[in-house]
Image (cartoon, rainbow, N blue to C red; front, side):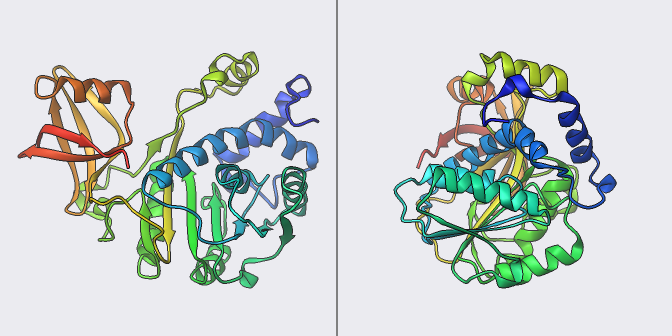
Length: 330
């Protein structure tokens, strides 16, 4: 199956993979049966995950982050979409090598092949996390819900040697809580780059915020909505292409840059009611729900309605009402 050969898609194969993703407890051993499983996944599900990585990298760029290591370690690599997104985002960076790890040799072989095809000058190798080299950028993507406690213990024990950690997971309540647990465990070893704008205890751990979770929404490329192949994928898989939720965490040993202010970060999407919208806002003081009356700032309200903003704001508050908001576009 070629990289973009939609004519050869086996929908039953994709349905099988999706059923495993929805119920990881049913997985016994690697779920890749052959290279065709990986090729189908890479064309569809991995591409959607790549859109999430593009969103995460975009936010990190706005925070002033740039890679300060020339080495990448991709844990639970799958088809290597995380690494490929990072390499594509920084084509001028002097990358030296990429190390991948996955329980499936099929996955590591597939990833090495794809990276070598696109980046023949970058050395690619396979190595378990207990051999993780100091000073690398560790990428973890959509694996926390499937990994064993022992696998995660070894990973977090060794990741403290890394320069950076970028973790992207599905935007569910459960996944968000898993990401928060990683943040709290590692924040004394790293500086928090994103999505948080502070390094204090996560405000979502407060009892009154137990129903909330830290998630965001990526932007699907416009061309996907005009592509009959993606329309068929959406219809057959029962997946709404417009909805691309994710949770993430970016940590760095030494910050390569950051926004000059400590703004608030919107979590999820505002909820709209008659005459106002309610925003879940995270900042150093905690996580709170603020109301933005439409009459208070029609321009800001419209920006929320269209969901066209960076998610970073400085609020002018009157109690728990937003009187004004300055968007941070660093």
